Length: 369
Image (cartoon, rainbow, N blue to C red; front, top):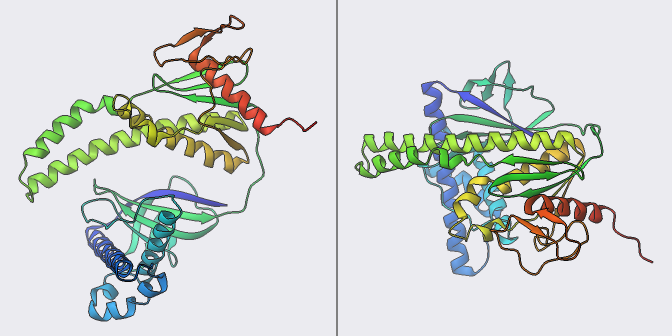
């Protein structure tokens, strides 16, 4: 099993300069290779194989000696591999077309080998021993280490380790159905009880502060030092919003995974939902996709299972008591009565129970006669 542990790095001024050179070399080679791929396709109509732009490296190091002196060789090899993965993901429909990299955004490099953990430090080739803060023990064999720098000038190392699969540790065999929403972030039904988790609306708490700092940034002269400082202040607000959202999602997902073995959610079309201009901001701020990803990998670690039901399943319009499906149910209707069995339903609670029941049906399909 592969597990990644993210740790904070505290490099010295000299090490920050060394990191900047490595980031610059990796970024330059990525852009050079991507440009070569695009030109080759325009001329021939065929993709440029990885071995071609990977084979350019020896000659490029002669033409540009700083590629050899300022950057560890394996980092550039990883750039070629990652570009090939980006093209593969694009052709298989998992991602968009690879983009050129800019020095003004998040920077990252990847080391596939020769990194060691020495007490509370990380020994990085051509950088040296960098102080780090480890919040958990590094277990298993280190496969790769990705060093990144955020727009707020913070350094992190994501250490990917390979460990042996542990035994399944189930608390009980509880099955949960989760209906994700905006008013309440998650409505969880275990078959008997309902638990609601409020939507904290992370971006709304910082909206005024963000608008004020963005206005100050817009007034600064382009290329000036004051603009760079104002840009960093805006980035800090965005980082605070992102951190608070991830902290909330991690805590909720951890609690739900610890309490259950199987969790059922809807396979929501988030990209389609954010096209609604009245709800797009709230949907993006909720982080539904990130939450489902957290549930998925945490369940897999303990041997559990995440079930995603079809997005067209009428979870809100179906009566959980008799199975009757109403023709229309607008978003403003929060409670409704089943015309067949006269049962009164809370819209979200009913949806969560239907999602749970559908997950159980998928797990235990009816046998053929």
